[in-house]
Image 1 (cartoon, rainbow over the protein chains, first blue to last red):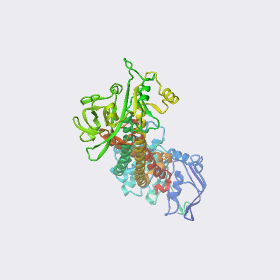
Image 2 (cartoon, one colour; image 1 turned 180 degrees about the vertical axis):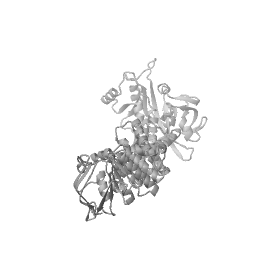
Image 3 (cartoon, chains in turn brown, cyan; image 1 turned 90 degrees about the vertical axis):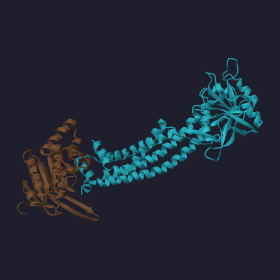
Length: 228
Length: 386
């Protein structure tokens, strides 16, 4: 059986003024369905770029990115937006909740891109918020929640549309130790209980240790296992 | 799928101060715009209601108004015999021989202005059935008496019942006040046409107005007049249309001047709306990036910001029109270029003024919001999230 995420010979370069910077260099990686992968590495190693490409918010310069049988590198912008809404759940370091919307409305946002009816959406949102333990906070605005609670709402938003893959960029980077542990436990639950594939970028070794697989990147390529 | 409307609305409410200032700016521009249209429409309405659809006015060709029109008595008598002219039971033509002249009088707010004196025949009251004597009595034919339009009483000094006005070498006594359904007649003094002719030593009339027969067609009359050597220097016109034409010069002047000024104002309002929307985009960069990452397309972002700007303009428009509507309770008086006499009229809020002002405000919202909305929609997800 082929991997859920199959990346081969991925190169990503950026042009900054007249200079061309190679961020990812001929990188290949397979991530299986149900994996919980942590990407680690020093700043500038390309881990966030790799995550962004997997999430479909950045495009490869060269190479192939096959996710659930789709070569996302060839999709048009509109197709890619649709693809993201179906397959990717985002968890950001700073939660990125919409401040003027309640927890309920924030979680409902990705469902607006689905054909679900209003009552179906309500059911999904309530379920997602109860999974993260915030069913009683659905009418609260982000400013009325703690950092940990905000991140849990963000996770509820990510799981509401039931995507295949969760991409988490430093999900505990802005949290205290207790809240960070809660979030990591939640991610572990999503992986173990619901079989969701998670790709997480982190600087924190204790966060990375909660993943099943840790990949280290350096200068735009993966360091072979055992050498890190 | 578009971004939910409550997102747009809540963002709008969240920045109520800046949105409020922008709404205020747009409201003022729409107020001026609507006021200008209401003024132009008020003049048109006043003069249009002066005439009746059932009446026909005869003027000398190329005359720019009643004052510059001359019709001699033989021609007037000839016209009274035409088949289009309705007759009473005694066979007399239902036609008024009008003489119009201009005098000047002191205004209540200082200064002197022109006012029209219309000499009419006895039939005038029966074919102009909008005329009602509200105070005093009708002038007596054969005497130097006047009735005064109610709009003049409000504007001019010493023009009440019992007052005497000197013109044409004699003193004329005001004996009554008339209402004419807010038409231009309310801005006139009326007297016996024969007395007016005698006072100014004139034999000719200014215009003739007759009640047409039910089957008479104005176009046919024009053809007949043009083809008759005795009548081809004169022109028949539907009375309502005639007075409407009299308002055109003034209406055009007000509209062109007013709209030019408001368009200049609107540039300022649009720049204001644009600055507000640019600030909204700048403050919500991460939000835009997040929405795009979640799967909302560029067009959804463009639409959301554009709707936000249009809501701002819509509210500005409603407030502006609301303020302008208050003007309906006021009437003003100004010199009509068509007759060079004082004309009193009210601001008139019509459906076309309302829709024109609404469209104007929405255009301001659209133009002001488009570039910021385009900027928001064109942001790359990565740079927005950074």
